[in-house]
Amino acid sequence: MLYKVSRWGIMKYLSVKSKLNIDAQDGGFTTPLLSYCLENGILDAVVVVGDKNWKPVAYLATTPTELLKSTKSKYSISPNNKLLEYATENYDKVGLVGLPCHILGGLQFNLALKVGLFCTKNFYYETIKNIIKERFGLNIDEVSKMNITKGKFVVETLKKKGFAGTEKVVYEIPIKEIEKLCNLGCRVCTDFSAKYADVSVGSVGSEDGWNTVIIRNKMVEDIINEMVEKGLIEVKEAVDITAVEKLENIKKKNEEINKCSAYFAVCPALF
Image (tube, rainbow, N blue to C red; front, top):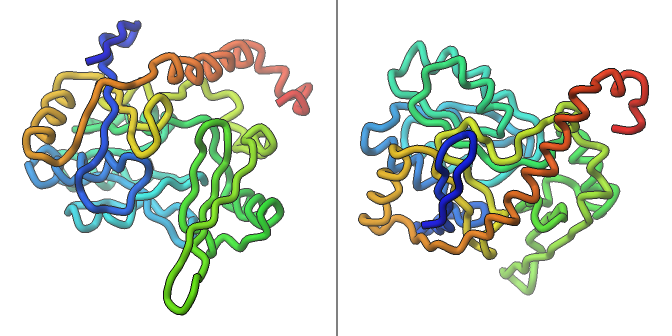
């Protein structure tokens, strides 16, 4: 297993792929992880994100079936943490899936499991709709999948082919062309890999179709080992840690911006 020692402790890196037949993002690790935790009493409920026409809708899942509405990534702002007060008052063992900012905010609650998602940028919903319309000529309801990967914003659609068939059509643009349209808070965020989570999940550093998973404590390591033994996931030690560190370091540059926050008010064009 690949290890890295940091101020946050010893982290272990794995490439992981689900063996379950679900339509998910990249390696599809997060859904079977949460399903396993719900089925085995590790969690009673977990805050996840579904969508209405790609507009994020946070909700509380208590069964594996309820998780299936949350399997794909959305790149718009979602108020996940608004559910945590209700969840922790009504359930003993609550989990949270979210971006680094969600995980940081979740620290004020007694959570049983925090699953952090890699994040470079996030956008307001109307911004995403406009980008898809103006750059690709698509309505957002035509989109079947979105991704930010390898420096590109990628959108997939399913077009009719023949009498009853479909074919996947992929559209992409460099993320640099739209990054200034992101949420203002993302421009000063310093956390790419959700360093306060129990486990962090993304695609950077692993081959296509696999997730990069950063294990941050023994509880998660034990859960993953159990899932491997039960044939739920496939794992291999193939993470390019340098690729993850590259994006972590880009985010860390915002620390200097934060030290000089007056620049944001005086020279907003720089941001």
